[in-house]
Image (cartoon, rainbow, N blue to C red; front, side, top):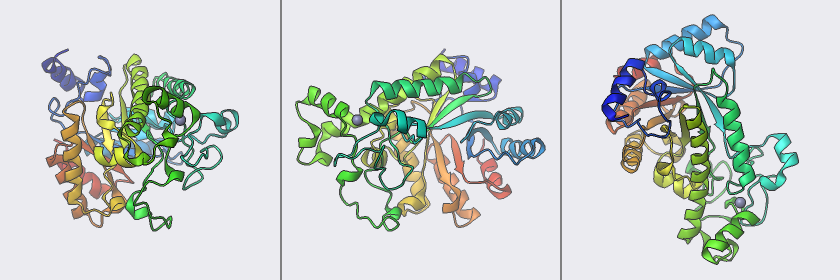
Length: 359
Ligand SMILES: [Zn+2]
């Protein structure tokens, strides 16, 4: 399908993503230049106390503001179907590499990532108890994740998959958390540096004749960095193939810019085979001003080279006023974002701003 035909299909279908169902999810037909309509997203945790009438009203108000899809943090067929009826795509938001389910911890502790000081996330989670990172290099982990995505997308009411925690553990935390954890991360510390499991060490040694544990300055080894970028990329691209087989779109929530993402969580997201990306451009986390949102979007757009659209993830609690929020949305759109992805509960004022930037 050429770009002109795609545009036609897209306009007919009303949305880019629904049009994707008729083509391979990996054909990268989602360039921001193809569909000028801005499409917004909301990250939502489905609340089972809300009745159908309340949901219908809420999701219709989202649609009216230019929201075209919801990333649901949990599977709730009722929410998905009501959202669909309101014209929204309903995607399931999946925690990917960070998986602390009891069954996995008990049956496959060997699947978990190991730090430079030899501790497994299965027994010694870094920073917080829910940080249970799997090793992306193990074929068993890859198969497990592919099966998870398959079982999600087999459900007819699920329109797409949204990957979260698709990365390594933070080797460096965002700077506003250093105080909270009483930690100085001006260099990469061994207890937060992953993965030094047997699989990763032997795979790397086979290719580069060096055991990563013997690298004098591991944070300065370009090959060791790249090895880890590529492990996550490989997982993503395998999951993209699964999504493609269902002709359903795959997107991800990632760190705010390509440079920050690679440096602190080994995410090389501009090289992934996705249908869209939602960088979490949460300026407060990095002690940045609202204007930085535009800089972050511009960097992402530059390195994506039109591969797929970028939706700027904004964190509502970071904004001190509605005017500040509007300034954030404006600079994101002006720098090339295809829409906004909202974290937090959008009220009428927030929706009003989104509506101004939907066309
Ligand atoms: Zn490993």
